[in-house]
Image (cartoon, rainbow, N blue to C red; front, side, top):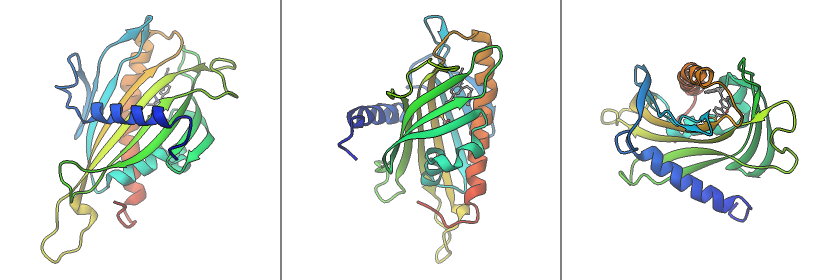
Length: 240
Ligand SMILES: CCCc1ccc(-c2ccc(S(=O)(=O)CCO)cc2)cc1[C@H]1C[C@H]1c1ccccn1
């Protein structure tokens, strides 16, 4: 739906986030430090503070075999799967269904002692992008989540401190063609996943606690989420 109040902001954010996600770590500006590595998964962060609050930008790259970018973005965007893979989630509701590719979520996350509990209110948009490098190749898929307001849920009016986040999941599928006359199977698929996020905790929380949480939670999240998608899709037809 291109006639919605959020459309101009969504267009702007998707363009900016996709451009950033496509940039390599080297081009992304200096100061990125590798803080977690596990097989094909590499996680980088930049130590940044705003008003004394940790807002460390995060960029993770991962390559997963046997799934497509569409399948990864579909399972990340769709609400019905979220409780299966998002371990820090306490509660999630869809406040608005703007269109079949744009939802507004309200999520409360489990409290991280000694910080107070957080919630997040954000629009989420899924989109297929043309594959500029290889016109005949599979499309690129992305999901962008960005904090927004909602008249019925003003920030910090209940028990939770409202976080402000921008997240981009960008997925590029590669097909390694099977031998002549052989059928295409999941063994011929590989997906390059780039996950970028900036989470402003919204209220003061000890830098050491937040950085410890991110160091523990982000690698766990990306490994768990990608394993979940592999598991959910392994015996299903390939969704390009
Ligand atoms: C004080 C900050 C608390 C806190 C607020 C919010 C989030 C968070 C929200 C959304 C998304 S997502 O990628 O849009 C997927 C939809 O849920 C990821 C992370 C994470 C944390 C912290 C709990 C930590 C964490 C870090 C990494 C992954 C999951 N959780």
